Length: 205
Image (cartoon, rainbow, N blue to C red; front, side, top):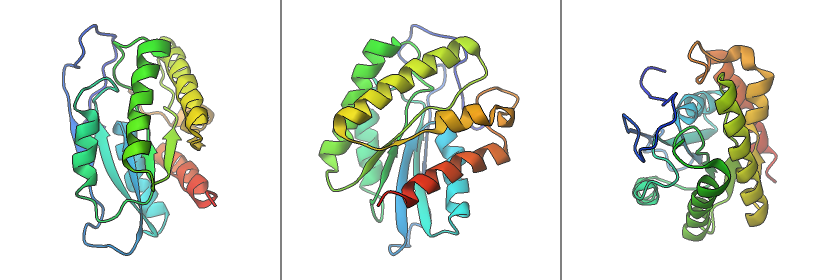
């Protein structure tokens, strides 16, 4: 996944060395198909494409992938601008955990994460929001931080009554499908993640 960046070392700066957004509207002229908006990081970008294919294009996954951390003052504004361009908004999948490691995990991160969740639920009250847990990484210290962040995400999901898609569990079960960088996944790995997402969405009723 050389198209994206991941800061392997913790930094004190609010912004990473490289900041990026990757936005994608799948089959933009198709207003009839079911759609899901996946807001996340580079993992979401890789998974989104595969999920659309694995659904047989019965669900089109639009994507807002970004390096913006949950404390980035432009994150909500950027999401809102993108959503205004979508042909339909039926489901939102939200993940943000592999960026912004300048934030303490159980306080600053949790507080800013909740602000984004509140923004999504209040701005789009008719749209179901799913919390997507952050995938595991090969670095042991970072892996422990991801666990703390996922704990915060699950607590916030429970507080707001939101369903959770546990991609962390899937990534641990299929750790052999991590790519050489220890962060992104092989093609088969993205299939496993997409499979979990599709299964959860299918069972939403």
